[in-house]
Amino acid sequence: MGLAASQGRLLLLTARKSDLEYRAQEISQRRLILASELETVSSQYARKTANRQMKLTRLVKQGEANLSQNVNLTYKNLIQSGMNDDGSNISDYRVKNARGQVVVSDESELPETAADAGYGDGSGVTVKKDGNKVIVSGTYNGEDVYDVYVVDSKLSDASETENYFQEGLRNGRFIIEQFSAIDGNGDEIGSEASESGAIGEWQSVSWSGMTEIQDNYYTEDDATAQAEYQSAAARVQAQDKKLETDQKQIETQHKAVETEFESVQKVIQSNIESSFKIFS
Image (cartoon, rainbow, N blue to C red; front, side, top):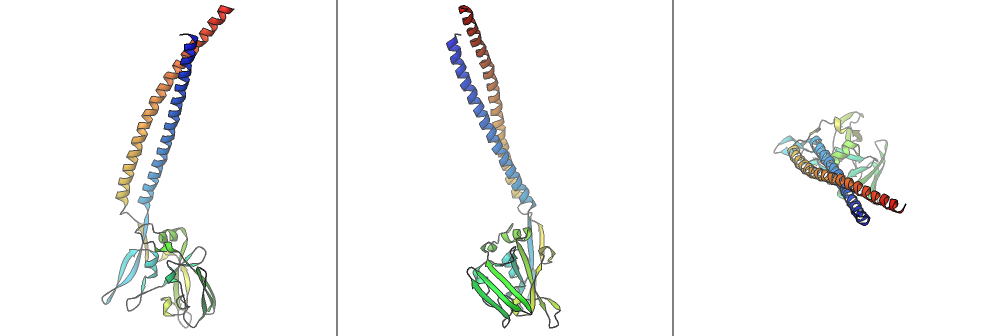
C-alpha cells in the first residue's frame, strides 16, 4: 500500500473510530435515562403500595336513628362530622394552616358574624373583611380573640386517596381545632357545635389522637400498582438489554478499527523510514 493510499485509509479509520465512539456515548446516555426511568417506576410502586388513607367515623341520620358511618377523611367530611337533633350537620371543628390562619375551602364558608365564627352574638367580637381575608377580633369570655380566615380552594379535594387535606395533616401544614364548651362554673363539658352559641374556646387537637380518625394502609390499588410496575419494568429492561447488545457490537467494531488503525500507522511509518533511507 502506497503512502497516499495509507494516509487516505488512516483518515477513513479515524472517522470510523469517532463515529463508533459517538454512538457508544449515545447508547450510554440512553441507558442512563432508562435507569432513571426504572428508578422512577420503582419509587411510584413503593409509594402506591405504602400509601395510607384516613377514614372518619361520623354520625348520619337514618330514620329515627343516628348511625355511625366510615367515610374518607376530607375537609368537608370533617367540618360536617357533627349532627343536630334534627339531623342537620353542625361543626365541632375548624382547620388552621401552619401560619395560624383559619382555612376554609370556599368563600361561602367565611364568617360574616361573630356567631358564624363560633363566638356567639352579643359578644365583643367583630368580623371585618380585609381584601381576600376575614379578620375576627375582639374579646370573648374574657379572652382576646384574633383570627384570620383565608380561602384554600384545594381543600375541596375529595379524592379517595392521598387527598390534599390528608397530606396537609400528615406533614403539619394543617392543624385541627375543636370547640370545647364549658358550663357556668368554667368546667369543660365536651364538644358542642360552635354555632349553638355555647360558651367555650377553640383548642388544637392532634389528628392521630382523635378516635374519630383511623389511619390505615390503603391496599385497594396495590394490584393495579404491581401490574403497572411489572409492565413498565419489563419494557425498560427489554430496551436496556437491546442497548447493551448494541453497545457490545460497537465495542467489538471499535476494537477491530483500532487494530487496523495501528496496522496502517505502522505501514505509513515503514514507508516514511524507507523513503528517508533512499535519500540518506
